[in-house]
Image (tube, rainbow, N blue to C red):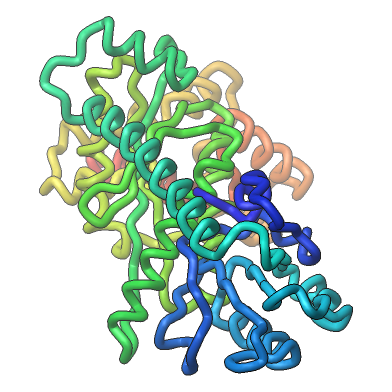
Length: 398
């Protein structure tokens, strides 16, 4: 998306940044000519405000107060012009803009007009929207196209730097909203959230493909074994949802489909993620996780399908195979340790006593379980899934 830094890069005649350099990455949704109060009736978050000091509507002192009021309403930056350039912007205003990290531009009276600025910014935003739509159209074709041939796949790979010899997966970002009294303002806030989300996605190191589709946001990214992209998504969503303008009003969860290598199967990954959306609030989320997947649902996904014993048993066997093979080859009791640690409330002392082993031996076993299974034992959803698989197998064969 367009930022204040992009406005500076336009190098418009007579437009100079004089304060607020630390806020240059603020996103610009549109321009706004400041004229009458109340500002909240006209101002939307992300607007780049333009104000003229003419001693009729605004004196310089009133402009400084206005700047602080507009900052509270969420403006992205501000351009100030003084009729006939008859007085400089005071140091107090420059200092305040620096404190607020609010980009403040001085617009020379005989330089670029506010119309020039508004048109230039509007053109930037529209061009960015066209580029985003083009990328979204390509992702849409990948997910729902009827005939995805090899040439098209090669074109997408070259354009976006994807390596389709690797696995990729789809994520659907679902946004939950709390509505207030002013529905129009709620919509503006949601639109700004959507723009902010897209802005943050474009900054991700993994550079996923992104599109807005049916009030959801869809991503396509590489499925790495180290889950680094999932962690990046988790961090990004927490960052946005914790912002004051969204906190308590808007929050998002990313639902992941399965990983596939063949681009013709990416639509299946989307379908898997979509089918989990209705279930996302049913399952326990450790630490209110922002990124969930079919793997997170574990054995529960079969219960949602009304359950098939053969399918459930296959899942349990696949889930426990590493532990069972290790125990069989080494004469250890890691599987029993998983169950005992759970049954004893994750209390090391009680578990050691129940297994008749020293606490150091228990810690070694727990470390080995983490190593073999590739999980963290404080991820209680993963851990509970292991416990369920052990119990299900025992119940089925008792």
